[in-house]
Image (cartoon, rainbow over all chains, first blue to last red):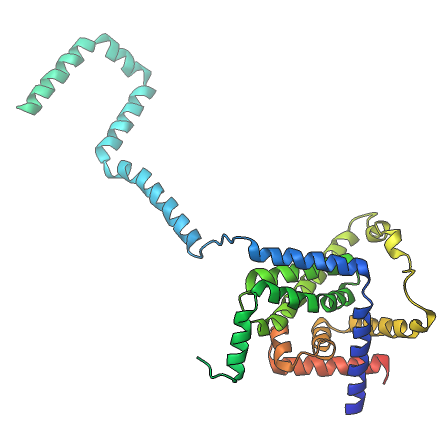
Length: 118
Length: 194
């Protein structure tokens, strides 16, 4: 059994070595080119992505999103004013009323401002 | 610092005195034809085998050139085996897809280069036929083995890696190497005769 196994191994190795020696010149040349291409990798500068870079990019995007959205969320008066403006723009009749009584509203605003200061 | 004369000291001194690019060049030059033959036996195509070997060389240079040169051999064969396995997997998927594609089932044969398919005029005298036939039988026997058994036999018997090196190259335990190798030898004995 041991001898049989040894025979198979020896014969296989022998055949394989012969086939390696028999590799044609065209293939040898292409293998040499492949080796030079591999060795050129040693000269090439490496730009490796740091493992933490994706997490940092995600955190930056999240921070920018928060910076853009948060001021609007934190100022409820501005949000209410924006809603009021939107309602005024969508209701055409109220705009007509503004045109008719513009002097009255200018006076009312100045009185209100005066009360606020006093 | 290792004592002079110890194996570690000698190895480190030798490593320090040799340019890494030269050392890698020498290593690859010594192994490239064997690697090509191994890949060729598995994929049965020269161009595909060359591509696989080149990829393995590039990956070794890119990722492991800085490792001690003693580790290159098992690492290289590990990369090569992975490349062969990936290629075979892609080929199986492709053939499955092409089987569903009407009129393209024999596409590979249509694209075969007649010059490459022609017998090599420098193939050698007739007395080599016996060796060629024996090699063809061995290749057929290896091709019939399951992938892991083929890897174990090629690395152990043909490349002469020890069990530990083969385990690194195959990415498995030494016990698995022994099992795969034993089964490969049994299968080849049954197929090729003793």
